[in-house]
Image 1 (tube, rainbow, N blue to C red):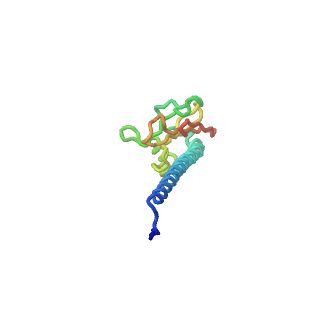
Image 2: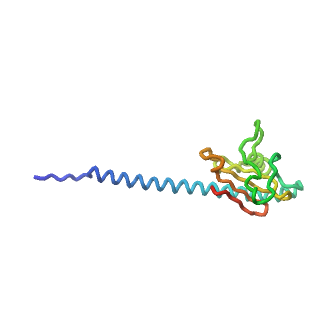
Image 3: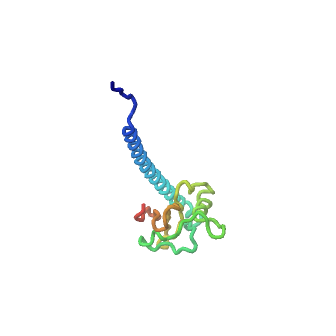
Length: 163
């Protein structure tokens, strides 16, 4: 007399668990890519808002807003990404470049947040214009592996190989 079990075998359960593990790994990677792309697009939108506010700032003050006194700015496309160094806080408790942009241009609105994942600064470009530089604020990567992008006053975009 042979008895037949109506349950699943151990092999069948292991196969199902393996398939679920593979699907969850693929879903996690897709989600991380989606989040990264969304942060980059939000930063690009913030940079375009800053560029629009530069026109208003120019008409009010007669010059563009720069928040990097120590940086020389950029003389051309070759040094566009190194025109300034974005930061969240400045030296000795002073405002960092991102907070200073929010204070001067967005009436202290919270536009450049930690959730956006990038810090932004504004420097001079070719002596008569401005350039907006954004750098990824990830602590998981080294400075050389971070996404860095820049936008000039003429809406020319520059990105490093990590973007």
